[in-house]
Image 1 (cartoon, rainbow, N blue to C red):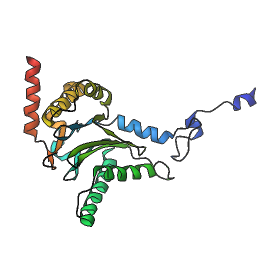
Image 2: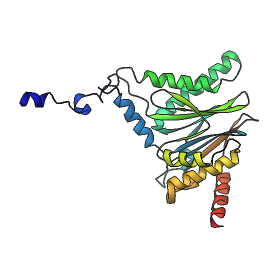
Image 3: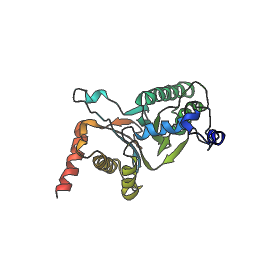
Image 4: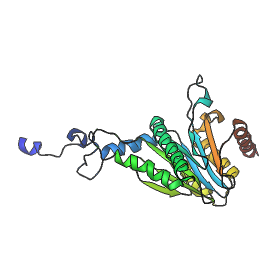
Length: 252
């Protein structure tokens, strides 16, 4: 009996499959990578949207301390004039990847005297992420990044996850409010939506996710318009104006 009991399969945690990034579990999973994905789902919500006239990023900065200066917290970054990004998960991991992407974009301008395409930035980020899923002594990046920009007068949006895989999207969300926001996007997003309309939709979605915690102070938003191809942050005033319009419609 004792021998049979000792031959019973042990939980993954006891066998150590969740402690080594290079070790597959018996059912073919890399548990450390799956834990990294869970970290992303616990991160503050970020939304990316392809609009008829450009690309849009809207993110929750999740400022929970009233003593923090809201302007000092950044959740949407410029990679190049025509490329931006936002993230969910461990933001220090995101910062390292964003700075790498910024350097890659500038190197391309210096070397070829031309702007880099969005997909090249995405692949470079994902290559590093993938290496960290099969190298001993490393841990996966605990962050998903939405990268978007204008390629040949066409807005493009990609999502990268901790495994190093990427997909192109018309609109998507990452972070804690992913399920709720994507439900709204599936129901209300249209390809002919403008940047302004997309911003209203994103704020509406974040309002639903955050509830009474919704505050313009914790929103970071930016767009890249197809015509100008220039990364532009939305001011607090413009966000407040759009949010007030949303509130007025709700009262009616």
